[in-house]
Amino acid sequence: MADQTISNLPDWKINHSNPDKVNDLVEGLSGISDPEIGLSIIQLGLVRDIEINPDHALITMILTTPYCPYGPSMLEKTRSKVEEILSISTRINYGAIPWDPDMMDQELRDDWGLF
Image (cartoon, rainbow, N blue to C red; front, side, top):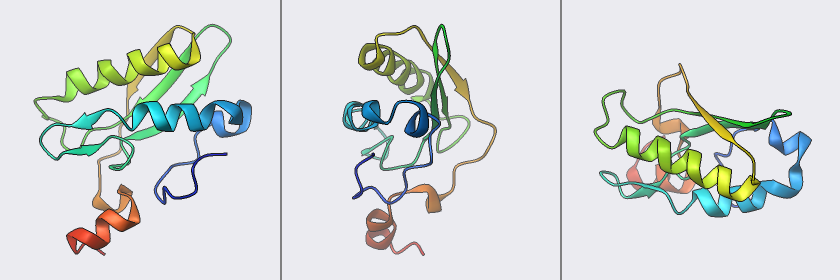
């Protein structure tokens, strides 16, 4: 199961279908950061879901703001990293929900004074 020190990790579909892959995904995606904020996409809670379908993986990801200038680059880095880790063609879906600081890891919210 996923690293229990990450308090904000959503219940990805892959947690149930391929739990053996979750830690590798968390570790790999933790290396992708939002350049403006300086925190990883995992710490920020931007990866909302990862699922494996018969012929591809599908990531649902959001951004901290819809007009993030680094958004296209972060989305592509995420897609590429998941494809590398899972060794399967990977697509990315831009999620419809807006980002909220409550999606951040609990320790980071506490450090920023967000409750």
